[in-house]
Image (cartoon, rainbow, N blue to C red; front, side):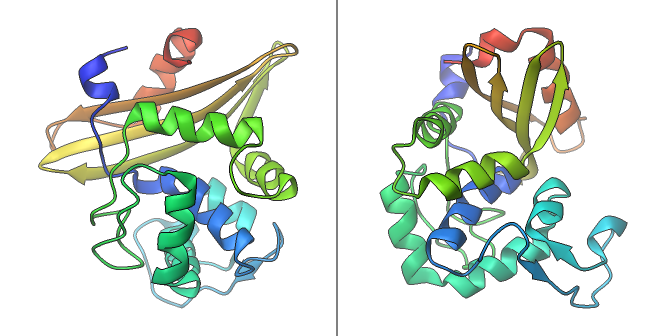
Length: 209
C-alpha cells in the first residue's frame, strides 16, 4: 500500500454506482433489481449502452446514462443528505447532479472506499439489509477455488491524470476482504481497470484492510 496515494482523494467515476444505487433504493427512486429504464435513443460509443437496461445490467455494464437519470430523479437535496450520512468521501456534489462523480467536485480516497465498503458489508451503513444485499449481489463477480470476488471498476481523468479504480470484496468461506485499488497515469498512458484487476488478483490480501 502506498500511504500517499491511499489517502489522496480522486473522482470515484463508475465506482460511485454502488453509493448511487443505495441512495436510489433508500429514497424509493429505484424499486429493486428489476427496475428498468428505456434507452433514450442517443447513440454512444460503447455499443452495450445503446439499449434498454435494468439495474443489474446497468451496473455490470457501467451504463453512464442509466445512473445519471437515477441521480436526476434522486435530486440534489436527497443526494447531499444521503452521501453525508454515508460519509462518502467529501460528499460534495458540486458540478451537477448528473456529473459530480464523473467530472465534478466529489472526491474519495482508496482508504475511504475501503471504509465505506466495510461499513456496507458490516451492516452499519444507514441502509436496509435488503438493499445492502441487493447491491452486493448485482456487482460483477467471479468465483474460483471457493473464492468469490465482487467488484466495480471506474475510469476517468482527474486533475490532468488518468485514474483507474477497482473496488469490492473477496469472499472466502470464513472471511471477507475489502479492497480498493486506484492507479494513476498520464492521460495518454495505459491506465486501465484490467490492470487493477491483474494487480489485485496477483496479491489479493495486499489491498485489503
